[in-house]
Length: 353
Image (cartoon, rainbow, N blue to C red):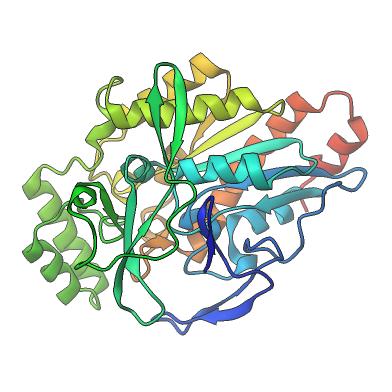
């Protein structure tokens, strides 16, 4: 990663590298702007081409898979003449995605896609992110964040502090505002130490680990995202305000895609409250909201079990393929609505390969 005073960081520009993981690793390539892409992001799109700009966190950036295996790249195979510029960035939240859109995405486009991993509501209210440096040492990095003053969004922590803190140097007043990746992408939010220890011990035993996960979740009455329960919850109000501001500041249509928790797909957690919040947002702002959960739940059980990599905590290669197949017809329908005066472009995107 490379320090960025506005967003916190981006990927190193112009990089081609193998990221090692328990399965041997995967290849990534970045463009000169510092985003994972096989191409540079050109200001002007080619004639008879439609372009979507995609924003999200590590699920969208593709942690755990190579560039060409991500749903963004697979969508280009599903929809002829579609270009998807993937601005996804690992470890970030919608506050940073909004900043990236306003400051880095001044290119021709026809559609904005916000791929919102619903867990991100935990990140949007935090000021510091706990992680590890290149040597594996624990560090704490500052991030930009918004609060609301009156009816306005106020940006804080910009420029972002360049030097990270350690556990010893982190100021006491910031300790309640730390987001830990240990809570991200896991079924157990704020899990006790012994729950985490049990799951790590049984990590090599996939079916047994899943059984334990189900048993422990039911034992605890698992409810991972209470921030969506109340429409007046402070975290939801900030998240909602950022998304509403984003929709209002662009002349292009916005498609908000909800990426669900793994626990919602497997039936271990109730998604109804966050689904209600996003329906309310769509009604108030006019943005299009697409919930991936029903389509993913409809897959055969053996396929649902392979949507996630339990080693990385991210979408698997199959999960990316499944999302691309579900999203393709939604994007086609959206393009038919927003490009009614360009029949030659619509015709080019209509037929599946």
